[in-house]
Amino acid sequence: MNTEWNLDVIYKGFDDPKYEADIKKFKEESDKLKAIVNREDWDEDLKTEDVEEVLTCLEERKKLAGMLFSYLEFRHSTDTGNGEIMAQENRIRKLASEYSADEAAADKLLALTTDIDKKAMTSEKIKEYTFLLKDVKEQAKHLLSNDEEAVLAAMDMTGASAWSTLQSYLTSNVKIDYAGEQVTLSEIRNLAYDSDPAVRKSAFEAEIKGYEKIADSIAFALNNIKNQTWYITEKRGYDSPLDMTLAEGHMSKSTLDAMFKAIDEYIPVFRKYFRKKGELLGYSNGLPWFEIFAPLGKDDKKYSLEEAKDYLLTCFSGFTTELSDMMKEAFENEWIDFYPRTGKEGGAYCGEVCELKQSRILTNYDGTFGAVDTLAHELGHAYQGRQMERTAPLNRDYPMQLAETASTFNEVFLGNYALKRADGEERLALLESDIKEKAQCVVDIYSRYLFETAVFDNCRDRFLMPEDLNKMMLEAQDKTYGDGIDPNYRHPFMWACKSHYYISGLSFYNYPYAFGNLLAQGLYAMYLKEGEAFIPKYNKFLAEAGSHTTEECGKLIGVDLESTDFWKESLKLIAEEIDEFLKA
Image (cartoon, rainbow, N blue to C red; front, top):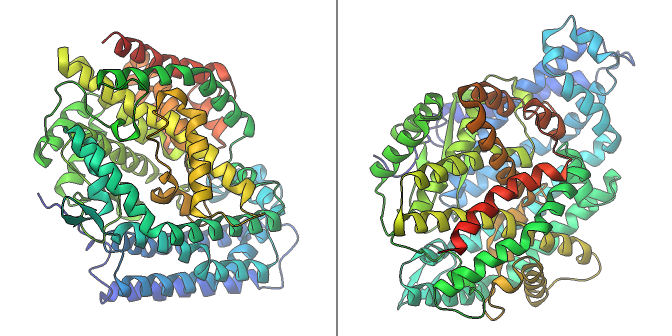
């Protein structure tokens, strides 16, 4: 089994004739769009054939852009210091930005469409894009002039996107001094799972010193990205970056408030878990941060890649063979880049290439059950991509909060599968590992949400130096982890290592993890009740996530997401696991 992914199915390199051909096609389709939107014979109400023409052109551009940008993202994330890749990224971004005004003009043009439902009765394409067309009419209220849209897109290249690249470069290439050697940040963070407490503590201390080397530069990146976001927020007429994020994600504030209200009620339960884990590890003042990922019990098994593959295929074949067959394809057809190395980004992600009916998955695999769980999570994203292959290209952009549903459902399914087959010390280890991951999705994510909120609230009035950001992060951790974590050992630099804060044009990429985890808990409970009858409904939910509001998607599976009661029921399931753990 190859341990690095193969991208040849997309392009064999920058010298691949297909790469240049697709760039040429993208430019041709973009020129076609420019000609369409600049025509002077448009009626104030677009005819059916006019709407179809614009949509078809946008579809072709999206397919080509998807291939090009996916390839560049995959190349960059495994070789962040490669100047040639950066040059190609800038080249394609610049090309795309040249047509941003035309994209805005296309949206404004489509916003002129009236009687959408009536037109959909005679046009299959309009029927496919009914939600998109209605959304475009709403979002058009926040579009700027064509020239302003072009300026914003061009500005981003040397603005937020460039600052984001800097954060990725620094965290991928900083050398951490540890045990007489220099290691990567990904390698040092993986030691948080080590079985030796001395290793966990020393690695944590080395990690903190590593951030100190690059904190000033990353602080500059964060300040500038967030201030650019504020500028765009105000120009588009939104009250706040959160309001803009929710609107673009088709989610109501009442849904977000309902979730966090339920989480607030259950936070004390999670703190009991942290304190109990601390006691089991010999601490009396709460759990030190460097012990959050410490293994408990005797689950010291390491999974080779073949063992991980077999475990996942066996587990998920019990849910649906469509999922397990796709997992087999991912392992055998070089979809996955497994191990950390210099220049490779930390963490994990999945990028779907729907036009090729494939995905690519980046991990930093270390052989633990947690690493197997991460594979399951990312393969969940790939499964949602597989469902969306059946949908129209412009309907595949689903919002953040629904993007984490399939991935987290896989984690819930895998965790329950493992627990049913374990007892004694092994069960304790798996139970604690399962709670640990859920606590990350609920408690840690809540702290990240509070931190990002505080950054947006303060960054316009003053420049936030590293010490300011450290203080804000510790305050957020205090509000969420509370007395569950030893106050002498929190993690002030969590703002520096999480790439989610640095994505241009995407704010608050944190609450979707809590949303996805708790939604997945509820979906798993439904699966247990409904069995195979649940799967078609689940697949439909995943496939149509880009063509409904979040609340409408909930209704597809019979869930009221604006009700605190739903979120409490999901949290109750986690509380029951914590109750079992507290008896250990």
